[in-house]
Amino acid sequence: MGVDLWKVNEDYLRTVVSSNATFTHVTEFIIFGFPSLQNYHILLTCVLLCIYLFTLSGNGIIFFLVIFDRHLHTPMYFFVSNLSFIDMTYISVTIPKMLAKFLMKLDIISYNACFTQMYILLSLGATECFLLAIMAFDRYIAVCSPLHYQTIMTRQLYIILSMVAWSGGFAAPLTSTLLALKLPFCGPNIIYHYYCDTPPLLQLACANTSFNVAIGSTIGAVVILVSFAVIVISYIKIILAILKISSHVGRKKTFSTCASHFTVVSIFFLPIMFMYIRPTASYSSDVDSLVSMLYTVLTPLMNPIIYSMRNKDIKSAFQKKTGFICTKSSFSTE
Image 1: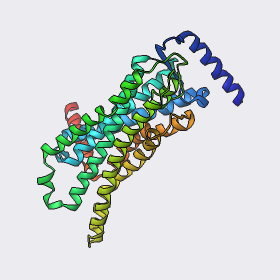
Image 2: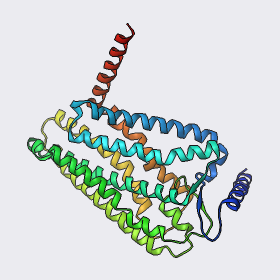
Image 3: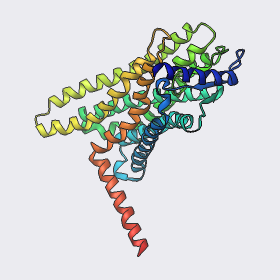
Image 4: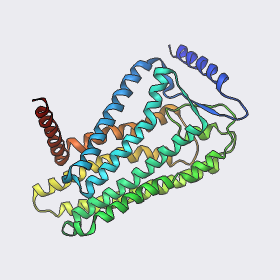
């Protein structure tokens, strides 16, 4: 069975490569994600479509609740809305292409579109790193300096911090992306991944990519480790502050406030460290595709659950808005 499946995949690739790759200059790439699951395209389509719709609706609800409910106009929820927007964009850059591949056999992506997709995903990942670090800093001030929180975390400050996260996130991968664009790609053009990412693309280059790997790993290490260090230091101080609270109820309430953010940090940073802090361009399609799923699909999927089911303010705002809409619609039908 495994031999037959591999033969089907090999024959299919040979056909596509012969029609889409010129071995002088590659103008298109072939997205060949999940090589061992090609015969289960209907199941994959259903699963990915459900994940995509749930992620869009969940993050979309949180995003618009924060905008339209004045009770959620606080620094914490402002950062949460930014995170929801990132997650909606993140998953919209990857899953629709996979759905098009499985449903309509549209597995070809142009050279420019591939590098654009890679740059956007790297930028969103870096932005999320910075944003999670800022959110940890915000929780540190809220827990360790509650009396001065309003004066420190002003509207002007948290908007500036958000702008720094976005601008820094989109600036960080520019160098590595431009260096990758200068590499010659003369074939083959098959990307054994479900989107255009740095490791599989570098493997296709017809040149020595050790310099690209070194620059990319260095930038990734700076972005990821600095952000992670800010988060760890903030949470160490938060835990120490929580332990000093005499009331058991107070400790539980404070810890619950920070638990959601810490959960998101845990499922996001560990796989992204594995992917982008590497000494070599070694790449395993099965392992790396699975690891990439954790931060490109699982994190956006889990964020609405973590920030809504564990958060009374979000649930209260949702109930008020849905109650208002239902009341308004009942009046309109009378």
